[in-house]
Length: 81
View 1 (cartoon, rainbow, N blue to C red):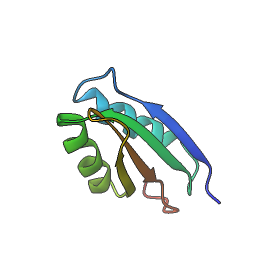
View 2: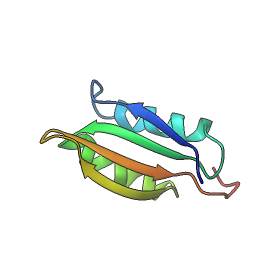
View 3: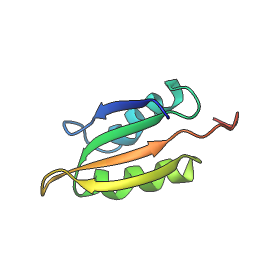
View 4: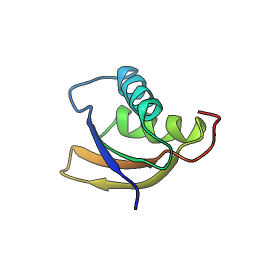
């Protein structure tokens, strides 16, 4: 089973939401999963799209409240990241 890490970026605004997510993903071991808490709107629109474009896998997007979502991302086993 993959190790699951947490990141709360609900107090951050774009583009820092993506920057913090990418930096955290880069620091994780291959195969790890990151659960990112983020706000609806721009962060929810941009972060999953941007990490997918970077080669990470978005496992799920689920609402925690009406305004906060949890995006689960997996860091693959490739050396490209």
